[in-house]
Length: 276
Image 1 (tube, rainbow, N blue to C red):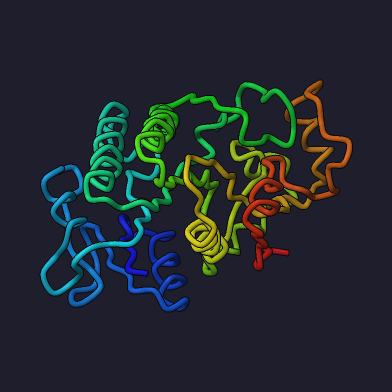
Image 2: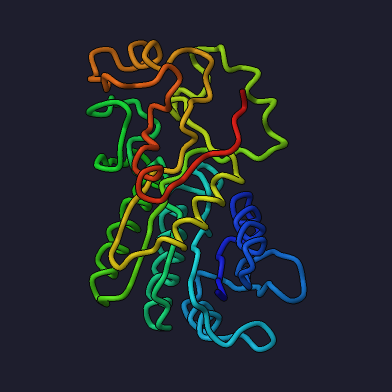
């Protein structure tokens, strides 16, 4: 396929571009920063005219896309003021999703986030491990992700053949950052992430699988490593962090407290990298 990737210069974007090219796809990155030459076009994604034009075709790059991966965003709260985070990310996602609809692109994979399901988990979730049925936002970044998922779900109903998959990523870790797990025996480590993480290469694999298994309609999947980033047993962490919250009887010893079961069952996802 010919696949466009917004946010191609980010940590997850770079891994996704590499994974898709390894699979034989032609990939065009759309971002503010990237390697000059074939395979990248600089696009200001807050400008709807630029993104629509880029999706329809770019001279010397492509004449139409078979699929789109939308990863571009201000990645966390705090980098710019809160309202600006929301406005930027909502504008970019609307431009990309609606532009793809207008351009006739029928397969879209988009980055959602653990922030759409309770991060930083100061309020206990209804049950553990947290699955895709739970949606809650407690900051402007998360509020944007909840709104983006809602927009995508509605747009998916506008065309019978349109597939939009939202991937709720947790903290993405690349191979140079594994020294952070030196703190894995600290009960406060990754508390706001309830112990979760995902290797960037496994995150890219989730993107590739979502494209391969795309079906008409809208679907949401958690993208987390199946085992936690803590050396403390998961049931002990659950009791420490969320006393009284129901915990699944079959929770594994170090199983993630954000469920990876749906993506494993529906897409055949298997994480290949583990800090242990």
